[in-house]
Amino acid sequence: MPSVGIEAMNVFGGSAFLDVMQLISHRRLDSARFENLLMRQKTVALPCEDPVTFGVNAAKPIVDALPEAEKDRIELLITCTESGIDFGKSLSTYIHHYLGLSRNCRLLEIKNACYSGTAGFQMAVNFVLSQASPGAKALVVTTDISRFTVVEGGDALTEDWSFAEPSSGAGATAMLISDTPHIFQVDVGANGYYGHEVMDTCRPTADSEAGDADLSLMSYLDCCEQTFLEYQRRVADVDYRDSFQYLAFHTPFGGMVKGAHRTMMRKMTKSRRDDIEADFERRVSPGLRYCQRTGNIMGGTVYLSLAGTIDNARFDTAQRIGVFSYGSGCCSEFYSGVATPEGQRRLRAMGISRHLDDRHSLSIEEYERLLTGNGAVSFGTRNWKLDESHVPGQVLASGPKGRLVLERIHEFHREYRWNQGAGTELPRQGQPRTAYAWVKE
Image (tube, rainbow, N blue to C red; front, side):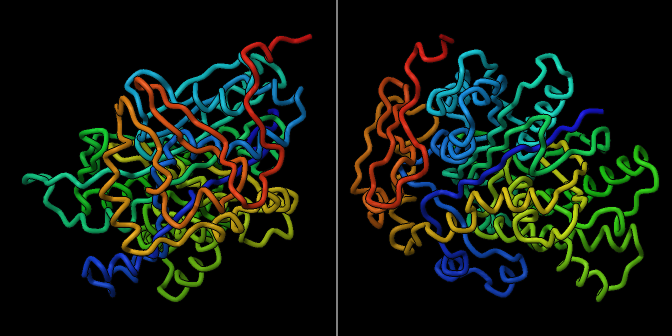
């Protein structure tokens, strides 16, 4: 069986964030309760940011690092999102253009709640394994933002949904999938998947969310158990404690992951409380570090957790990572792969932690002003032009050069530009190729 997995990986966590405890205090919520949920920061999308800019800014460093011949071997581009901007046109077409990829490339988009990233990832893995185009690569981009508001519910949607605002974030991950998996080599065939219909959370309109918090938690816990049991049936001699040196979870918020891991340790290993706490700190907490700095980025959250694990955990030798992915509605999967010291070195070179450190810290006043203007750039917006005075903290003026921003919408068509800020220029950024650049000479 040929090797397959993640050749290169990057994360974009936006240009601005809000301190979650500051928001909780402002909303007069129970701070003790939210401390147990392990939230720290949430990315807030600015008026000049949308799912396209997030996706391009995550993928551009990966694509720009490739030699031209290898860039042209990207023959599949999948965008994974529940934040689409059109019922028909895929985000992948915009992302393809601004990354300057070859036109000999399949472009498509997947919507499947927070499972979408795994759906795209597994599709890309199997595309490479098929050898239908030997040596071809796939680019999987997960990109989601939350500009929505919470819908008032009826009898079925009356559970406490106050954690939605503090936990909802924005962000993108980009993964280059190939037969040279420097970052994460997939255990081919080691998958346990499980799905059924449940109304735990939904987006009944393009810019709103509704749900039942307790039902969502119960569904998540059930799927975590059932996917692992199915994985265990397919892979011989698997033990939840001993078979995986690290675990990466879909992370709506850290407290949910801690509860799931505690439940799994009790059921699968009969462990006691102190042992469970120590195991959580060693095997799971490295994967929460980046998730705690963006909030729930939906389709990409499990890959944000995977990136956090590889970046922050200890890799003196090759280590196996178990991965649990969940999407409301629902579909879920447990799978695994191996990361190495070389993979950690390559991923750290992307500077994910440094990027998160360099974002603008929003005041509550700036955040509230952004909420007031959120409806200006929403699903189906026909015409709009960026007013840079609505972007707080001089983010555009002082931010990195070469970062893509939304400039205007004209008759539904979104137009972008590369930011010319005063900050450090991003490496090898440039304009997309011309319409004819894909022709081989």
